[in-house]
Image 1 (tube, rainbow, N blue to C red):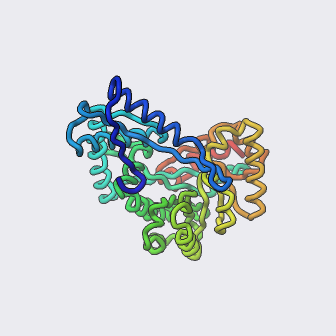
Image 2: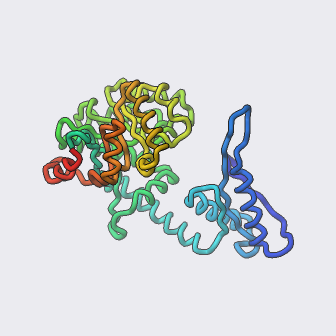
Image 3: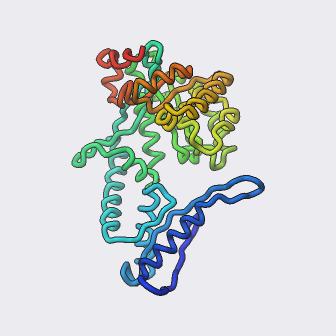
Length: 352
């Protein structure tokens, strides 16, 4: 079918067509989930499957393929490595998603996407050292649309670059209204790195806003290194040459995280929330301790993401992690709450 998509046409056997297709799909998912040994390396792949049955779900080829694709989409959204059988409600969901895509496109074009900011806090003093810019969409009739709902739509519709550029421009302008010592961090998607003008986009956002380069931090995830890593490293070095900081986000849950720390001179590492969720376990603390030692050796800053409890803060202190971000300190807030932090300072000071 092109790319990494394949189509299987299965002839009917005994029993229900639907049941037979479901059994086969389940066997395929389980078979492909098993690790493969290639030159001594365990390679893990997987698959997502969508099933449509003739004639229950259509009689024309285009109709069957479309309905199987809708079921496939549901499997991917469910976390992958599973299968789903088409049902009429999937078409209703697809129609709603198409409408939301149109409305999102208009919201980006009209610059109606808002930017909220979540502070990064210094544990020892309670001082806000930086904020992370996060896109928020307040729909005129639906209210706030969760990022988990509209970000995937932006990615699928090819809108993620426009959305990312809009957030970058707004964040740079907003940062000029924040305390001078506060940096603003903006996430860059892997797709943005496929555009040859990324460095120019960042330059323009800085020049248009008047924000000093040293106050902008760009966050990337390990996915940036998966495709065309040599070219992406070149882009990263060009960005770093502008004078901005580069942070490795969601560290520790990806593909070969440690190797990336030596491949590029990052300024900061943000440890993934998954570590905070399991910080009560001795093995998690042992891994975090090793990460802290490595980061210190490389002279990088380290931030714990997803901090939600006092116990997690205490464990961070014991491990020597000086910076934290999460609901324990503050939820994402609009610019007004950051530009005048006195109203929320007591919450940050609670960890001092």
